[in-house]
Length: 321
Image (cartoon, helix red, strand yellow):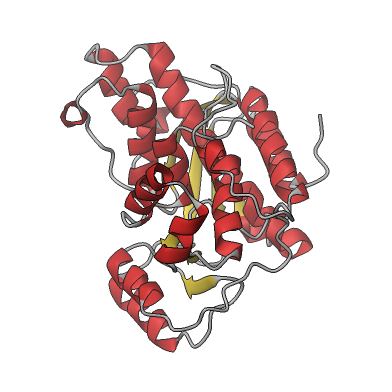
């Protein structure tokens, strides 16, 4: 199947999935973030990079290995391939190859979804420099990967979510956005006591939409619809993080920010999250809206969606529709 949206990304993934391709597919955005996918003879064997790579790795550990103490896990550095950590866990008999395959698949799904939304928003303006497929020799691998995936089976599932996301008017919403409580009193009126306490606890922890979906064991689509319903009632607002950067850059961007556009502060780095969050909490503007976002007209709050999952065993819960 050839997809009409995200066609450039689709083309590169088809190229990298060919048996004669061994190398790295690197994706960059205009803010400096970089995602990397590593292929061996057309099979995907590792990923690295992104906006919050450590948090992405931790989500996979908690999602698939919840019974194993976290202190047993070695977290790969931000720019390291996760295959190294997976190999270590398999060799130490901490996890099975099946569990490792699920962890890699879920991590790759998150990356592909973020990148697909980037292309969806940029459309024909996306630069050829955003994508690079670099051939490498087999000798460039530090060690033989113990897990591999067929990207042609993962990508169509991601595209189903991308298409639904787009059709629901959500394409400008990044799953790396951080929702924050704007009006606790109004939020309490729109939710029952149990839901309110749980939701506020998570939002006060400065979770991204990805993290909310993982903690609530629901899909990213469900939680985003829920949060946007609350956002339209001015209960919640968002901080958007789009690229890694240093502390000074973040602070300077916040100082230069004079308005809230489409419900987001124009912050481009995760490295000083507390500064970002404090800026959002002290903002005096209540005109927080999402242009072009479609939500149920009767104003129902879909808290129940946060409690349920429609995912299958083979599709990561966070991606499943």
